[in-house]
Image 1 (tube, rainbow, N blue to C red):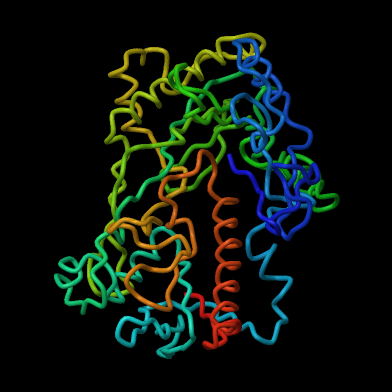
Image 2 (tube, one colour):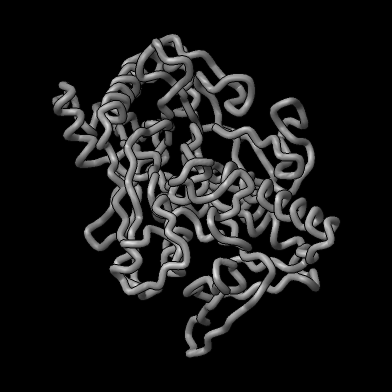
Length: 434
């Protein structure tokens, strides 16, 4: 999934080794007290030849086991909690909330500031710095670049935006982990659906509030399994996750557990080849951008996810899990051929919300940032977020995005110090984050 090897990015639950750090702000924890259904899923995966893997972020990814989580004492560690909260008292840090960046300000081809508005008021401000760091994420970062005049020149001119620099790669190379659910009705005590509805949830809430232990301290997916869609592959290209519950979306848009006992497995293609793009709908910074993900447009992605459904079926058909299965509810046993499975994927596939790549790092003419995360063709501007990934990581993107930020911060300081030592301006305290 992701190996947190950054010098100061994380604290591993298992201590330091060649794959994990032992110091840092971001806490890592293991799954504690997995549900019996999760234990049984692992046993069935092992029964069909998938080895147990105690550390997906270690020597190899292949196998089945428990995912590591960015949690401490039962509480999810966000980047804000782990990195920002401890330093909020610093005198050289100002955090402006409820602010909407409208454009980056340029003098010629040098970024010098950010123009932003304060939500709920007519107040707008310009803030200036010696270096601007754009960290809006895979959707907002290319959008703000284009609104500011950096992007495909013809596209910008079509919206009446003055071109600061023609950079055709902005918004290109967009990709994500698409995944699909596989649901089975099971015997009543093999699903927690009944425990997380109505009054039955109260004891779990009280246990969590009182001790930060119990059901509510677990991530949704208690088990991960990395396998290959084709045995000839060198490394896994499929990630299967297991949850001892299922949810449905009601007609009024609420997400609730199903009334009947159901468990969920999900499969994603972790090295997708399908690519989309982001464009502007207008020059208005408050209009949503035009996002074309292009999921399942590459034949290899379709083949891999079809294989993923078949893998999940094999695990569920193996003992000891099989004895608890009542029936397959989605896609249903009537869906068997590659064509039927592909139709199911196209109708019910979802995003894992791991979009990356729209400000790709590289050395070619279509790359957006260089190896120091500086926007090509302009000065004083970097992009530091998941949008710079040339290709998506083979697993979840949260920790890798934090690693990018940590590495990017080191680069800013290194370049500032080298500039100062060379007789230039001191940039150490002069960065604005958009």
